[in-house]
Image (cartoon, rainbow, N blue to C red; front, side, top):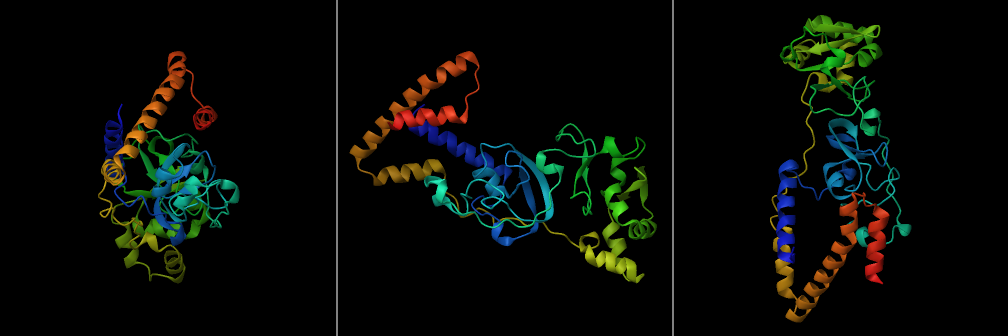
Length: 304
């Protein structure tokens, strides 16, 4: 593969990433604090929440799991929760020695088994073949996701409700949830001496109309406004300004460099490619999984 082909392939990868994450992946949300946002969990780092940008740019060699959205959660990348800097906030650290790195202070996020890549009361990894529903309240379960087959009866139509309050959160506020259940005339599903409350599509409008019914339900709803009002998810600014692909930027930079230097650079690239091919060939033939340390040793040898 020559340099031009490589840059073209990287350009295609960038386009694919932008389709999956249409926001600006050059923006870390750490400075925004604990907000509702789309999150990823770094299973490798353990109990670490990542914004979209950091999941893509800072933890690419780690096991990362998509969590969808959670409230009151800040990005943990580059803080006392992780072992390395945030390359989105501090791109210069990509070329510096981590020994001088001073992490930012981590926010006091709450975590659950989702951050180990596990979900539902079955405590299993995500299964794309199974339908899952997220608890909207989340005070007891940290907005966990549940398989319909684990918590619902077989005779319940999945189209008959929009979301749910899990039995753990119901048990946390039994009196208040009982009032909500009666206001909404909601269906319940028994679970562990409690029940899961199924909420229909119009539940927010109904609760908004009844918020003044009594002081107890008013206080509960005012402490959980997302049960009766809009609950927007933070969206990074659209990446419309970033129109130049890696391929285009590479060609622009090559045009600024003297021809002799470009020629030497291409020769060096071809030399490294040849040596890397030789290095990787035995791994491909034996099926051996290459480790990070082996890659580092290879490049140390090249540098020497």
